[in-house]
Every structure is written in structure tokens, then in C-alpha cells.
Image (cartoon, rainbow, N blue to C red):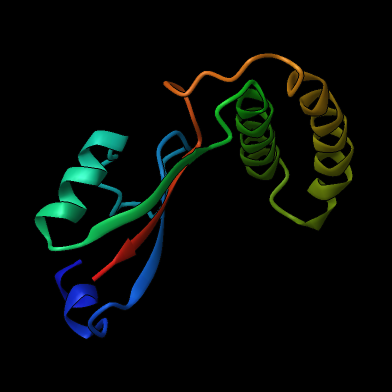
Length: 121
């Protein structure tokens, strides 16, 4: 973060996306998850001004996304070759269609997929 601030020209802008709810990734180097409050504090302490902040996928579609990740990982472990996609694609397609129905339910900004920040030096 300090290096980003250093190389960004004065008045320059940067976009950061940071996951909040997701399966363990970048293994074994995923050491922390940041809340919206933690991210805002961290960026401001490093000299950035927050121009805009948004949480994304803060509705029940998050459940469909997590289910797709689960389906993908389990099937790829059981069938570790390209044949696995014959099972993954139809299951995730059905799940995605179900996810579109879930979009009709109200948002909950306490449970969300990720953060998008537009920052300025």
C-alpha cells in the first residue's frame, strides 16, 4: 500500500477491490480479511483519500456464488480432469439461474462479497 501511494502521482487515483467473503485463496498467503471499517482506516492511515466506497454483491446472490465455488472445488477434487466440467457447468448454470431469483430479496450490507474503493493521493 505504501508503494502504491509512493508511485501514484499527486492527485492521482487508484481503484482497489478487496474480497470479504470468499473461500481461502492465495494459499498459503491469505493472512487477513478486512472489514469495510478496517479498509477505510488502513487506506486513510496510509495517506489516501477515499473518493468512493462500495460493497458489492450484498444480497442473497452471494449464497449462489459461494455454492458455485463449493461445487467447483468439490467436483474438481473428485474428478481432477476436464471431464469434471461436464458436471460443473450444468450445476453452476442452474445455480446461477436460482441466484437471479435471489436478487429479488432485500440487500444486507453486513454480509457481502467484496469492497471497491476509489482512492486519491
